Image (cartoon, rainbow, N blue to C red):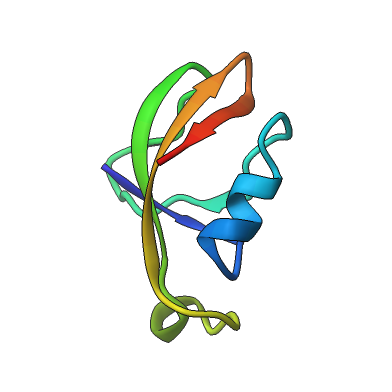
Length: 70
C-alpha cells in the first residue's frame, strides 16, 4: 500500500502532526487510506506535478489525524 501525499517535504509533513492527512489514493482496487493504523506514503513530483523533492514516509494515523511520521 502506498498513498501519495500533498506535502513538498518530509519536514512539512511532520509539521502537520495532529492534523488530517492530505493524500491521493493510488490503488484501483479500493481505498488504501485508514483513519487508524500505519502505512507508507510518498511524495512523487514526477507523477503528481507538485513541487518538492521525492520522499517516502512511514505514517501512523490515530482518529483521522497524523500521529507520527517516520
